[in-house]
Structures are given as structure tokens and as C-alpha cells.
Image (cartoon, rainbow, N blue to C red; front, side, top):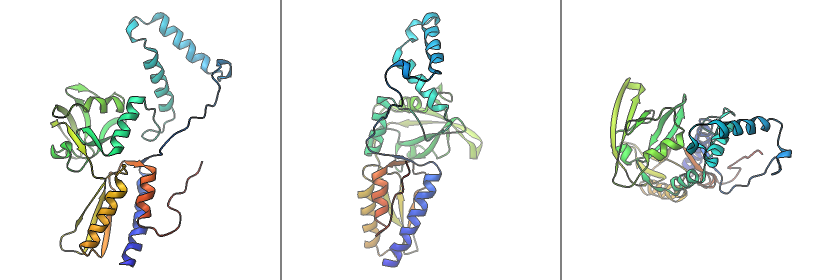
Amino acid sequence: MNRMWKIVAGLVVLMMVASASLGVGVVIGGSGLLPLWGANADDAPDEFAVFWQAWDIVHRNFVDRSALDPQSLTYGAIRGMVAALGDEGHTAFLTPEEIERQQSNLSGTFTGIGAQLGVRDALPVIIAPFDGSPAYEAGVRAGDIIMKVDGEDVTTMQLNDIVAKIRGPEGTVVVLSLLRPDENRSLDVSITRGEIKIPAASWAMIPGTDVALIRLSQFSANALDDVKESIEGAKGASAEALIVDVRNNPGGLLEQAVSVTSQFLSDGDVLLEED
């Protein structure tokens, strides 16, 4: 069995590196903000003068005065700045409410349809439905493009706004209008929202073999415990080899990724970080 675990260790490292290169997100617990400039406007770069000029013009001339909410305008400006970096899918601005939703996701329990969303070719797309979730049971597939939510076009919305529209109280229904590229067809899917309790890992023996498959769906707060349980289950079933499946894994908590990898490595570096 020792040889098998060494083989698996190498396999897991390779898959984690591959997943990172394909856009798997990892969240580092805790954050610190280091200001590049002080609070004094005199410290700001010269280009900021254009921003303040635009701000003043909007406040003087925009007809719908109710739209001039300072917080919304500030958040919108920050989103535009971050989008200008061109690092789509990796670098993003989150409001306090969006951070709360993200933390809820990573806790392993939340209310919604149970699907990971992302952006591809500037369109909102299903990265993967979580195993056993309402979205999974309703037939939603990885790669489905979300065109409408409850009849409203969402193709030009920010991803976080789409997530907010899809989520809702347990027991309520949301209708997703999807485009399925591999079948070249559109479909409407009605999904009853529910409390989503997603195991980070699950396992099963591959029929007719002595190989166990561990499905690692995300690096959420319960990833380490679920992986340990899966490994013990595979050992108890006399598995001689493992396949660790991280396809469509959206990422998660950095410490969980390190802890999970450490279950297969006895020494050496798990993580190399460059600042």
C-alpha cells in the first residue's frame, strides 16, 4: 500500500498544479490592505483628476438624481479599475455582501441551487453543479451559458449580481434560461432552491477494479475531514490504487488545499509562494 500512496501523492500534486493553471481560485484566510497613497488627495496620481472631473459632471448633470448613490458609484469605479487589468476570472472586487456570500460558500453550507458560476468569453457560465444539488438534479450541466434568470437577460450583468438573483429562500423556484453549446440548443430549467450542504470530497470503488475514485469538488472548510474520511473508506474497501478527480473544482481555502495535499506527501514543499 505504501507504493500506492506515493504514486497517488505525485498524481495529486500534478493535478493541483494543472487545476491552478486552469483558473482554480484559492482564497487566503485573512487580508491586509497596504495603501499605495495616503488619504490626502495631494498624494494621489495626476490621473485621479480626470476621475474627480467625471464625478463632478455626473453629479451636476445626471437627470436621475436617485441613481447618484456614492457607494454604488464608488463600487462601480473600483470594478471598472479592476476589470481594466484584464485578469478576468482571477482578480475581482467584492463588496462586503459579496464577501459574506463567498464565505458562506466556503463554509460548505448555503441556500441556493448549488452550482459554481464563472465567466467565459464575457458570458456567465455554469462551471459545475455540485453533486446532488438542486441544480444537478434539475439537469444543469457544466458549460451551460446562463442567458436569463426568471426571464431577465443577465448576459451583461456582473457575475456577483447574477449570483444574487439566482440565490433566494429555501423552497422558492428560480427559472434559468440556458444555452447548451455542445447540443446547440436553448432550454429553460426550473430549480427549487434548497439548503446546500456540499461534501468537499466523496469516494466510490470503480466497478470491476481494485481502484477507488475520490471526487474532490472544492477546497471548502470541510475538505480535509472529507478527504481523510474518503481515504480511510478506500483503505477499508481494500483499494490498491486511487484516482483523485479535481475536474471542475473551483478552488477554495488555501490552508485546506495545503492540508489536503499533505495527506499524500510525507515531506517536501506543499506550497511555493512568491510575493
